[in-house]
Structures are given as C-alpha cells and as structure tokens.
Image (tube, rainbow, N blue to C red):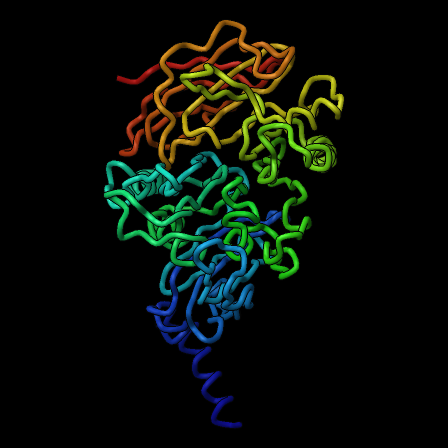
Length: 453
C-alpha cells in the first residue's frame, strides 16, 4: 500500500514539474486521436480515442486530472454486411472553465475563445463509397483532398471549427479502382480513415462544433456519432444500438455563445426526410417541437446563426429535372410553426451542407442568409450547367434575391472584421476564391462578393 501511494505521489510530482514527460499518460502508441469539442453547456470537452486498458490522465492548468470512460469497446449490431466493431475506448474530460489550459502528450489542447474572430466551416468530408456505382478514389489526394483541406484550414489558425455534418461515407465495399485498400462499413476502422486520420491537423488547431448529418443517422454511422462526436454524455440506450430506438433519432437544439450579442444554435436534422412518406407526420411533429426550442433559444441574444445539416433555403440541381428546393420535412415543420417569417425571430444566417457544393443565397420576406458549405471532400455535385432562374422560390412565397454557387473542393471561413463578418470561399490550398461581405444588420440580410484573381 505504501509503495503504491509513494508511486502515485512521485508520478504527480514528476508530471507537474516536467510537463512533457510521458509518465503522465498512457503509452503514445495506445492513444489514437484527441478531439476538443464544445458541449451543449458551452464547456470544453476533451475526448480521447485509445486502445489503452484504462483512461489516462491529462494536465489541466498543470494539475493532473483523470479522464473518465465515455464508451467501452463494443461490436455493433446494425451493419448489413460487416459488423460495426469498435475495439477501442473513448475517454473524456469536461473542463470547468474556458480559461483552463489542458495539455496531453506534451501538446497544449485548443482552448475556447469567448469571442471567436476566425471560424472555419466545412462539411460533407468523407470519401464516398456507395453501391452500386458511386465510388470515390480515396487513395488519390486529388480526387479525395480532405487531408490537404485540413492542413490548409489549420494554417488559418482558426478560433473555432464548425462541421455541418456527414463525416462518414465509406458504407459499401469498394468495387472500382482507386479505393481497393479502403475499409468499409460503420466501425472504428472507417471512422479512422474518413475522419480522425485526414483531419488530424485541424482537430489539433481549434475547438470543434459538430453537427449531425444524415450519414450519422441510426441506419448508418450513428453508433460512431454517439461514441465520438455527440455533445451529450454517452448513454447506451441513446446510441443507435437498437433498430427501434426513436430516442436516438433526435437531439434537443442547443446554443453556443459567440460573444455578448451572438450565438450559434446547433440543430440535429439527421432524420429529416427529403420527401413525404408514411412516417412524415411523426417526424414533422418532432421537428416542429425542435424549432420551438430554437425560437426560445433565439430570444436570448439578438444575433443567431442556425447550424444544421439539411438546407432549408438552399437548392440543388439535377440535369434531368433542373433545380430543386429545401428539405421537405424541415420546411413543413417551420410552416406549421407559423412564425412571422419562415424562421424564428433573430435568426440572420443558416449554415448547412448536404448538397456537395458552395452556395450563398439571400431572400425577400425577412428570410435569413443561407450558406451551404458541403464541398469539403466527398464526391462533388456535377457542375450546375445553368444559372438559377430569377426569383426562384426554394420555399413557396420566399423569392431568391441573390445567389452564388460553385462545385469545387475546399472550405469556407468566416472572419470578423471590425463589427461585421466577411465570408471567404477557399480552395484546397487555402487560396481565396471569393470574398463576401455579409450585411446581417438589416432585414432582409444581404451580401456583396468579389472573385479573387
């Protein structure tokens, strides 16, 4: 007993005095990935994916703190042709203050900035592998450039990263050249290949806000979502482990402060149906309740950005049928909510993905600006071969005033300059393609853009 106590005291002294000593942690090769995320209470949560037998300790303000076990190894049950195996543990620790500095494995972990000035936005990032014929060349950095995007975005030294959903795309076994070596299915190996490994530089650069996409629904990669990225404490009964777990389909919206007068409102739209089905009424009613929460949260600050995966005031394009508008389920839920305009009061901007493109739109009828930033790495939409028709209605009764779109890989960045926000569309190397000054002070909100040479 005395020897064990002496060992722990000695270890504490060494770790405090020699901050980089590996004695503070499990062996380096056992720790697979570290993520700094912001939970629904606005607190910084450190998550560690590890194959160590126990969760290690980390340094917080030079004091040793033990991490807690979030999720243990498990073999999932919902995959079709390959079990979703998670052989590793997930550990976590929530910091009590945004001013605390956490350090792990000799590196300082990103801290929350109470008023972020530079925000990286990306979405739809994984390598698409979907039967029968949608297979991306995951092993070709030009055809799946996410790793390069991560390096370039990290070089921006952002205060915050917002991912608008769809992290995981390697669903089916590769049947074409270019992805033969890739894992598939919904287990840890695909999460490692699609997310943790290529995005490592950006995960180390700033805290993240994670938005759930339809690829993280319970029918797809939801088990990994709840293990790694969900903002709430892990609960097995709410982790996509059973086919009839309605509780796993929805999450309550929450707000993250961006300053005294501004906040993000994060919305889980993973189960939003694109078309009317026999299940539509139940899902629409569920999202109507979610938008009531959004309206309540938006009362707390005058400026709100709604971040979700599925576009509401956004469009896609199909050569056979032309342009199409926003998500059926979410539009219906908002229409039933009967706000003065389609969205709750005080929402100036929506951030979303799902359509693999860059898109920026403004509208009449007091509707907020709409940004789609779904061009982070997954197979892009084919180039839109015609311009959006004048006054196109993505939702009935709301006409489009301005619209820009392009189908090229990269990421978006919002930067606060003086009292306003500037949006920059970046290519995979970090070069600015487009600079847009956003006017979020009036109604309707609008923008002015200039292409960079």
